[in-house]
Amino acid sequence: MKLIYVFDAYCGWSHGFSPTLREVISRHPELAVEVVSGGGQAGLGAEDAAAFGAPGTRTAAEADFARAAGLGVDGFPTLLAVDGERTTALARGRATADDVERRLAAFSATRPS
Image (cartoon, rainbow, N blue to C red; front, side, top):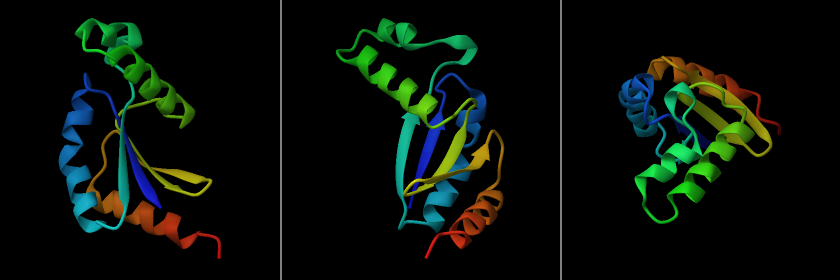
């Protein structure tokens, strides 16, 4: 199982979720964490990311935006648990580490044998 954190660099809620994410990671050091920059506020997209000018920025941004969309993420921040083909949202927007912990335990309890 792993966690996928999808955030928006322009979103205050994503920044505000940082303490929760740190706490969840400290409680579960056995879980890998993938971080995906899912997009920009107000509809900003890969074209806007290209404005930063670093080589490969546009390609990396497009890949992250596509990854977020492929995961079904439509709001930020979103924390997902992925176990094989199974995926569940542990947090969308505001959540405490205890909220995430309860959802993660419920997801783990439904793990196929």
